[in-house]
Length: 117
Length: 112
Image 1 (cartoon, chains in turn green, red):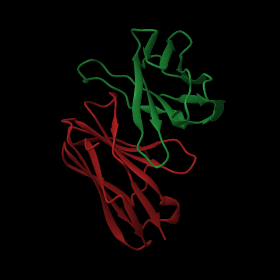
Image 2: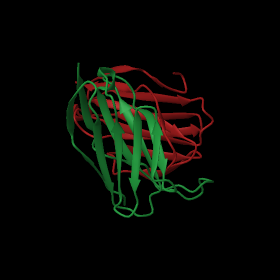
Image 3: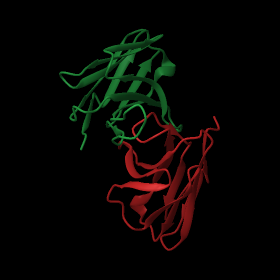
Image 4: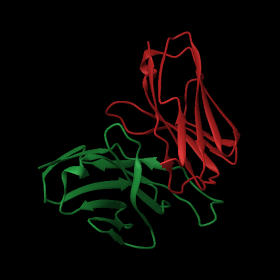
């Protein structure tokens, strides 16, 4: 089955700096890679995702890059703010467009990001 | 957010009790999930239901018993739990397994 490794487990940055979290996956068939943010005491929420037909996707201050050959993908947060402090989870799965063929979503271990004012 | 709801939000139970967790999704999704989240641990997938059929059971002890009566509702029946079962139990749903998942707020379970 799929195995997702996430690093680092904790990350501390100063406000305004950039933060990068990296994940590797084992199943070359995986084609969907979401990132979730979980604030303290709250539910995980999808913040960005990427499918294997693109190499990069951006949404304001966050971006995700995917290297299919190396089987790794990364979350980039620029101009970090204290409200970015949370646990971030990467995940990987396979699903075709119609959902008739799929693999379960496998999560990484999580990264605790702390942004200091 | 009201797409995925869970009740109760907090539950304290003794090891001999029987209780049930409830999850309801209003997103028209066909897949539902139970996860266990312990302190400093990743999300541990427990069960996956697709179109009301259980498609995955990740070696979960039999003291946890899921039930999916329809595509909008998911239950987790609990009996004779252990203190190490204390955790946040999250429900999620998605269009199909493998697609983006939407999480409920979770039930904070404490077993005494």
